[in-house]
Length: 160
Image (cartoon, rainbow, N blue to C red; front, side):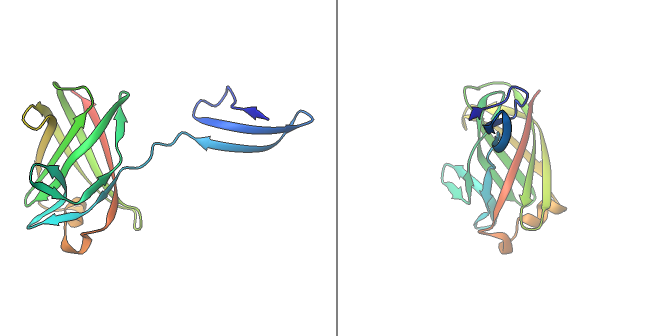
C-alpha cells in the first residue's frame, strides 16, 4: 500500500499496488465542511442571531480565511435591513467586505447580499455590516414558511 501521491496536492490517496500495478485507490478530497444556517424567528426578525438577548435560529460550523477561523455571529433580517456580524480569530481592527449567500440545497435556490466596509466594533467584538434589502431571491428566504429550514451559508470575505 502507498499513501499519497506527490502530483495531487488537493487530496490524500491510499493506493493498493499488486505487482507494481495500481489496483485500487481510496481518495479523500480536502473539502471544507459546509456552514449551515437554520432559519429562526424572533417577533418580526428572521435569520440567526447570537448576541446579547437576541438568540434565535442557529449556525453550525465555521470557515477559515487566511488560516484564521471566522465565526458568523449574526445574519438577521429586520425589514428592510440585513445585519451581518462576524468574528475573525485574533483580529481587532481593519475593514472587510463580505458577500453572503444562502443556498437551499433541496432546490439549489440562492440569494446573496454584499456588505462593504465592515469595520471592527469593539463593543460587539466583531466586524459589523448592515445593508437594506427590499426584494429578490435572498428576501424570499426570510419568511414564516422557512422557519426551521436548514440552508448552506457561504461567506466570501476580503480585507480592504
